[in-house]
Image (cartoon, rainbow, N blue to C red; front, side, top):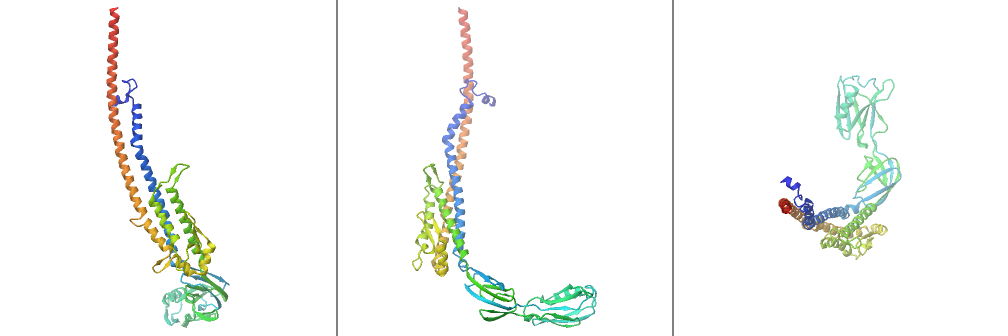
Amino acid sequence: MAGALSTLGLGSQGVLTNDLLDKLKAADKSSTITPIERNQKSAKLQQAGLIGLKDAISELSKLSTSLSDLALYQSTTSSVTGDALSISTTSSAKAQNFDIDVLSLATRDIHQSSGFASKTATLDAGSMHLEIDGNSYDITIEATDTLESLAQKISESTDGKINADILNVGGTDPYTMVLKSTETGAKNNITISGDMGFSQIGSGAQDASLKIDGIAVTSTSNEISDLVDGATITLEKVGISSVRISQDSEKITEKMESFVTKYNELLDSVKTLTNYDADTKVAGVFQGSSEIRGMLGSLKDIFSTTISAAGKMTEDFGISADRSGKLTLDKDKFTAALANNPKELQNFFIGEGENKGIFRKMNSELFKIGTSSDGVLKTLKANYDARDKSLSESLEKAQKRLDSKYEIMQKKFAAYDAVIGRLSNASSTLTSLIEAQNGQNK
């Protein structure tokens, strides 16, 4: 049979050929297969479009969630004039200004032993008694102890309150043991008695002394976290510094700018996906989709219908929308509103109690659109996925029918071609006989 199919057309003198079969099959394919492939391509584009929309909704939702977080509006920034201190703040810090006069820094207590020729030479047996911060420690000096091992014993036996180190200070007996309180402050002065002699370096451990707006303050540490709520102040040196703690308006404004940008990008994306370009005659993959257009309508309504208790709308806080719904942020107006009445701006964008502000409303709507099981995007995804699956199944069946049809037709062509060939041969033989007979009769 393979031989007959490969010589198709010989019997019919080029009429019933494989080329003819291919042309017939191509014509059949254009009417049965091509429409399904075209619809399948459209379904694939719609699925891809939904993924893009879902990503855009997700990005917008993150920004909206951030802008509905009270901590953002309470975030602060600080600045220091002068080099006597540094400061870091948290969201609980209140906006305020104050001056700090650092009179003295908190210090540690330091004691130094007499010199030794070697840090590994053994010591005479004896004992030491140490006191610090209300705690006392008895250290036994074994005859096998060296300066080095005794230092380690002291560090390990004093609950981390005293550090013992060996220093090489040079000279005839260069090695000396230094005892240092781990923490600063007067309570960390070290009392030493026993068989090893030490001398105190400086005036011992002292508390820091300072004045904040003229009020006297002492601290056992140079890092003070309980003087100003939400602020950690680190004393650096004696001197005066002025501190300003203010609302971090730049951080809030940057978030708002990002939201406006992403919101407008979403509007542009939806417009591209749903519009029909009359010039190019190209339609967006969601052209005519009322669900997608309706999704935007619910978001636009939030900005156009939200009114504060004082009757203010988004424009009063520097955000305006054009006829298409795209937003514009007037940074100067927004930061002025933030500076002049931060509580009113906060309530407008977040809300208070059961009264939802713009971004709490936005969060609910974006969840409904992008995450809810019966939301627009999930519903459309299920529909497009089902359509794609149905089209794939239809394409497979149609292709099988087409292939089967032309396999049968090819075999029939081969049979007809063979019959025509035999008839043609018989006709040629008969013609030859007739012509031969006519020649004999002449």
